[in-house]
Image 1 (cartoon, rainbow, N blue to C red):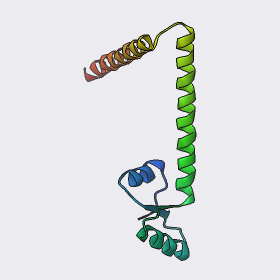
Image 2: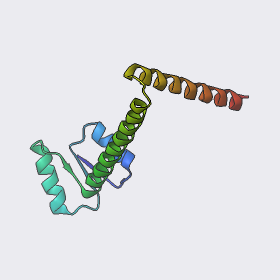
Image 3: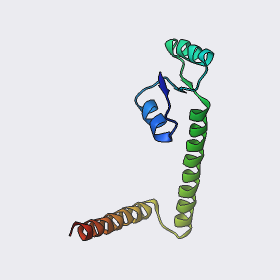
Length: 110
């Protein structure tokens, strides 16, 4: 159970990833805190409204990302590319990006 003044997404996510069963802000009332501790003791996860808002935002972002990827895949398929060709295109794109990063790193090392 985490009781914190931090509300930033990265702090909440780090706590959840580390296995926290609860995350409340220190501003939580005593009744909310006692209820949360009892629920966590029973194995029930308890998160405050900020965490639920963050979860909803993350779900929306994942769904949007999925829609964008599906749209790109659809456009590739309309262009007549096979699944294998799409995968090769992705790998070539990644290699190009990595090469550009390497060029920038070398430029700033000097």
